[in-house]
Length: 215
Image (tube, rainbow, N blue to C red):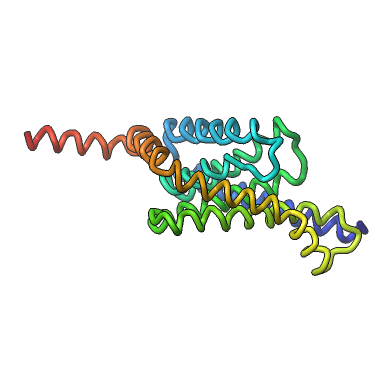
């Protein structure tokens, strides 16, 4: 790798980190409640603990399911932050490196888009397709980190890297699809209950007061 290429990679990684920090600043400016922060910490812990035991199985990323569910139920900002922090915390156990930045942006965008399309993901077919496609999108984003090891970066070499990771991306996509189809209902009830209790407690209190007045 020549000097100019190295500088380009450094600038690119700095740009990604800047974007991530910008999103965190926006979230911070919204003045989240303590309950929100604790909830995000719990979601990140669940994601990490669901992935580390299966780390030896290539392509199996249980964290993706939790991140997608977080985006759907808690919204795009929480989904993005949960995805970013999941990659950071998980790599503290498995090994940090410059590739961590690409994992952060991959899982962050996964949670973000899940929040954006949350209403459409109620459909089981769209939800399954979303999870399956993101198995490949996440792989392609993280594959960018491998390009730094190539002596020459061109279309053929990039496609070669993507082709090598395709079987693992396929497993990732299938895992997402299966979990989003089989476990969606259970986790939706659990996450919705947590959201109504900790994220929007005033809404729940208002509903309770309304019921008492009706009686």
